[in-house]
Length: 94
Image (tube, helix red, strand yellow):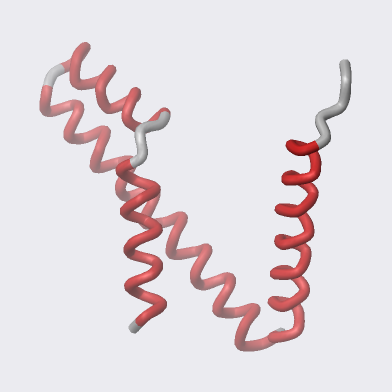
């Protein structure tokens, strides 16, 4: 149950953050009317749902059948985040 709540919160935060999706819905609403804006928002919501579904299914497959691989992926992700942080602390001179 905690995983479902966490996924719902992360999805909600991803959907409500202003980005290209917001610009697309605003543009279509302005140019083509409210109905097209609603259709655009519905399409984006369906795409997010599909993306979250296959991501969760893939990760649960890895967790169930290859549990050590999931730990390796987590460590690689942590190393990548540390790499990004080091790149921000010590930027290269151009």
